[in-house]
Image 1 (cartoon, helix red, strand yellow):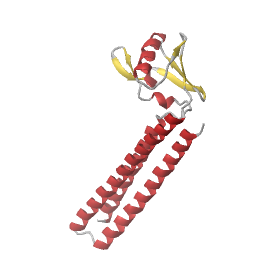
Image 2: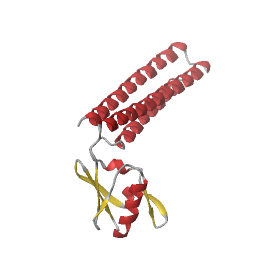
Image 3: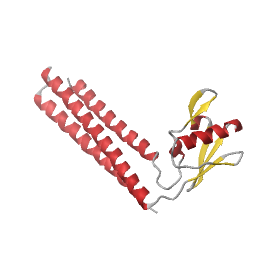
Length: 187
């Protein structure tokens, strides 16, 4: 019974950890006024009839805080990549110099910063809901184990452990959000 209980707790922790990873991935895609290759993560390009992520057909880097440089591995891909970036509706206007695409990340307006902060808070709430769902699922599993013969005091202590995990991961979400909001609001 104790092995099963520990397995339930481990699974809950894994789900909570995945919620944090997903949150940080989603937040890395948000523009905070500072250039990042992750801003182009959702962009796909038609590569000889196959829809391919941009980072699989080019090298993406940031030579400075305001610029993203996209260097295709094949020069023939410059135009399709440029069109894909424009189609992605990210608010970028790539400049094609025949060798690379240069994207200048515009400075964020105060209004845009506030919209981004709202978006960040929404992503944070989604992560919290995910973590609470993991807690609920774990508690349901623990109740099933109790019905199958696990002592009640063991079930209660396991639920307390799951609650501690939940509190810890909710705190982690808050810290991630705080850092991202600070990054967005810094001019």
